Image (cartoon, rainbow, N blue to C red):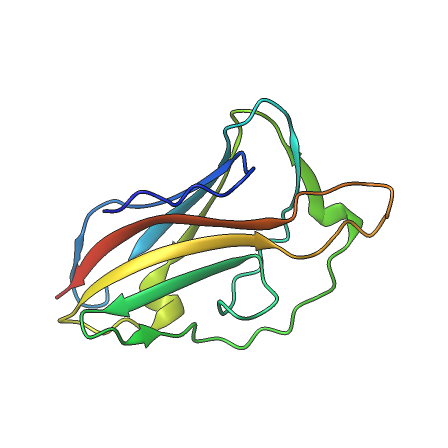
Length: 149
C-alpha cells in the first residue's frame, strides 16, 4: 500500500479502505472512500460526489488496474446534472465525508486477477455565487491491492 501524494496547499486527505484483500467470485468488493479535513479551518466542498471516469466532469473517480497494466473503466454512462449552490457544504476540521462503493459492480472486475486501486476527488466547479469561495483542486488517495478468486 502506498501513501497518498501530498497536495500543495491542501488540507484534505483521501483514503480508501477494503475490509479484506481477497474476494470470491460475485462477492461485493465494498470500498470505503473517506475524504477528511485535516486542516484548522472549515473547507467549502462540492459534495455532489458524482462518480465517473477520470477524464469526465465528476468529483469522484477510481483508477483500477490489473497486473498487466490494463485499466478497468467505469461501466455506466452518466448524464450529470448541473452543480448547484446546495451541493456546496462545509467540511469542518476533523470531519469526514465517507461513501461506500462496490468496485466489482461499478467496474466489472473479473475473477482470478490481482488489482491495484486508487481514488481521486476533484472539484473544478466554482460556487455558483461568485462571492462565495469554494475549494478547487485535486486530492489522490492511497493505493490498495485486491485479489479476486
